[in-house]
Image (cartoon, rainbow, N blue to C red; front, top):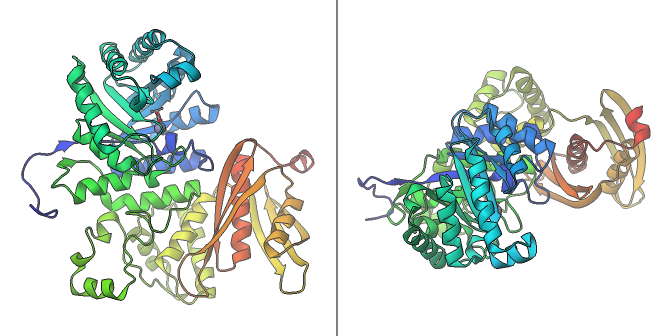
Length: 521
Ligand code: KIV
Ligand code: ZN
């Protein structure tokens, strides 16, 4: 049977557990604001994700608040809160997911020799006791309890089976065996699930789950292999973001199952046409760039550059395309409207692109579209996307760019004259720099002094041509954590100022204000 021939055999349903907001957000630089987390959660829910892991409630008050808020807005998906084995962790997670229609507590403890000896400093028997007491405690709060054996793939098999059996006996309904350090291989991981399910007498009472990290680039392959071994829940993240090399990418897993259903005879509930949008929303919220050649959602994933490939595509798309761009929500790059286009056409375009904006947001976006169309000959879908996403991301910003003029060229020093709106107060400043970008950032620092350090500055063009918008990403490091911001504009220096301010606003949203003398003014 070919990859494209539908089969009539009923397919096993595989649950998609998205941990973008927990394992994904945990990685350096991927911090999201509460509003961004809510936007991501609502999109995941609409896309058909079965379980949304919304955060780690004991980690901070911000995490707790985000999980509670997400629990109260999500309509269909189960909302999970992560907790270690301690009872206070579990109680906090229970409190955070309390308002969810379908609440889940996800509790974990390490089971591998190296983690038990050095990290937990506990004997295996003490760990086993905690497995039982943590799951029992969680079941006292909710019916849906997931238990994870952290570093499961490096755990001794007999001990893993004892822990799994005990967790199920104590009431766990899902058993996750994570490849925490991205160490396993597909065959080994598949066999592990087969063997555990065969050896644990009550294994039929729980759903088994895979959770793979990508340290050796095998997270997706390992996850699918685990499903071949009997797992029926896959833990993954949008764009594969997560600790170190990341987690298994949701979009790759879902499209592998859809495209190669002949050898992966399973089904998911994901609306695949929303994958590209989800990738962009998460990319913007985290400001984590998606690599150009990233499978499924990279900007080159459906681009055919070489003459031979283009010729083949013109003759028949299946010559070089195993799935259609439309199936993942990529619309053909199209010329949008010019400066004479009206509101109705713009509204229509936004709807087609999957945006639902409030009246105020629409008005802002329309004004910015008009301003862009005045300056740029052709306005493409990508331009509109950059403009609207930036607008949504900056809705709660305290510091905004009002205007910027830069003197640059071969004869330095370069000079920037900037005006900022800081909480409703318009202030101006001038500064020199070693290059125009340095001058812009110095002028911002003079108006809004802060300790955050610049870790990364990156520019890329949104579309082609010399009048293309520049999209700038900036990563700032402050108080042990990194945040990223993005800005887009046909002027690279304006985009740089917007990106820097976007990151600075995120630092401030975490409660780290400007230096005292300015904050008090
Ligand atoms: O990678 C891991 O082991 C985890 C657990 C907390 C599930 O993220
Ligand atoms: Zn993980």
